[in-house]
Length: 232
Ligand SMILES: Nc1ncnc2c1ncn2[C@@H]1O[C@H](COP(=O)(O)OP(=O)(O)OP(=O)(O)O)[C@@H](O)[C@H]1O
Ligand SMILES: [Mg+2]
Image (tube, rainbow, N blue to C red; front, side, top):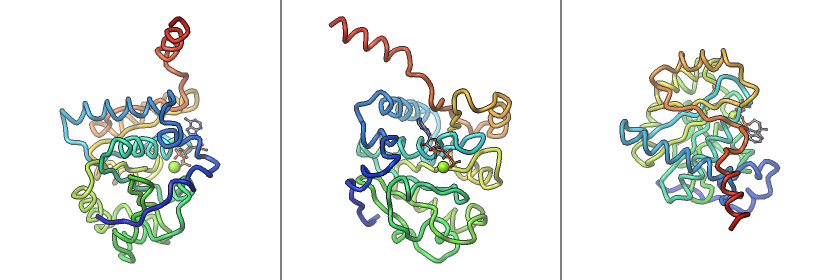
């Protein structure tokens, strides 16, 4: 599938660019965590096919978009054919995060006002399908055209990362959980209430493939590595 290229330089000028660690700080411990996540996904893939993975959370602002973007960038850096799809039409952020020019996106695809090739952008190796500017946003996930677009992406990409709406808040999320092969739940450490996590786990049921703890302390092995380096 041929899509227009987008320069990487402008990405580095973004305010939130520092948080796109898979792109801007690939040697960091934070970027390593996304490689660990991808690696664990690969292991799950040996047991069940996972091509389209939805990144959701219990509520808003827990880090779904950053997790989805960094996971997709990590896979793209490894040379995989990966597309990041912004399915959170109510609060889109990816065009801002990647500094992409406004263009047709998922909303226009669902309304039949655009075709997939004109809606896709590229950030380096990564293909990105943003939410777009369409007005009938709420209807997008239920649209048969959305299902068709997802099928086309499945045929062209080995990994589809869906930046999904919160799992408990919106009907869109339920439709998306069904369309995806599995769901990763992002939980913001110290903020997401335990009861909400329990409810989301029950709601997602067998579709849940794992939980990402966002904004967690660095894992203890990073301290171990630092001690090792100091003692070397
Ligand atoms: N690991 C992190 N470290 C620092 N800041 C973070 C981290 N994860 C998320 N944030 C910040 O928290 C805010 C929300 O992150 P993000 O947009 O990824 O979450 P979201 O779940 O997609 O939110 P929304 O519900 O608005 O779509 C952003 O301002 C982001 O910069
Ligand atoms: Mg978001």
